[in-house]
Amino acid sequence: MNGDRVDPDNLPQSHSPAVIEVRNQGTVYVADHTILDSGWVSVREWSGDRAKIPPQRALAIRRVPTEHYGERDESGFRPMRVADESWRAEASPDTPGRDEPIRADGGKDA
Image (cartoon, rainbow, N blue to C red; front, side, top):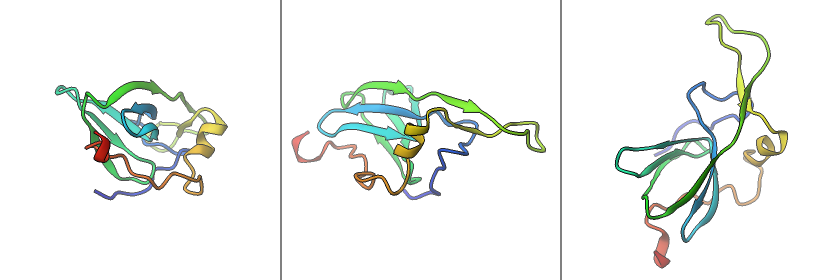
């Protein structure tokens, strides 16, 4: 499922970026994550694509800090971004390896 690319310098207020250790895939860095009642982890990748990771494949989740900065908009909110500059750069579309999508099925090794 494709969506608009997520800008790490201007995150939607509801987003919660994270680094997730995924069995048979390694570490993935996502723009947003939600743990569902079923235990599955719903994620939005920086590309805007969405995926779900089954609970047996999501080994660890670590939130990436965000910060509010700048002037308030007409709604009274300040923009939100990934707090650390190196993590913002990691979310860049030019970062090598950023094109590999999250595989819910774990690929052939699952």
